[in-house]
Length: 122
Image (tube, rainbow, N blue to C red; front, side, top):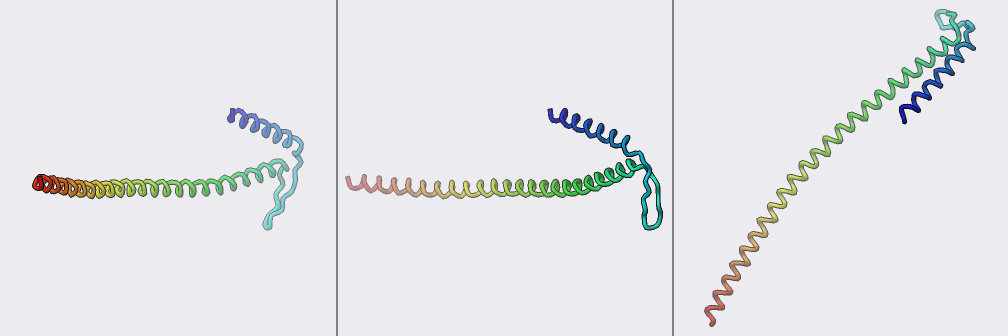
């Protein structure tokens, strides 16, 4: 649906430009510092519009490319952070498991000692 609206709007703009062209066929003179030229007014208008559109296109293209590069850099940074986080999480998990195994072993040893003492007292 979005493409259809764009097509309709583009067709509408083309029709307006065509009507505008027919109404502005009078030849006008343009003075530059070094020369003077005569051309139809519509040609001057269309060249001006084209030059403006080209300038806008170049400016937005450079901004878009800059944003894409920044996006790529940020995605790489996030991937690196995730990688570091996963490694840190795995390391910390292993440390905790080791610590808990030692605590469990100490408690089991203490239970054995207490059971041995209990048997000796009977």
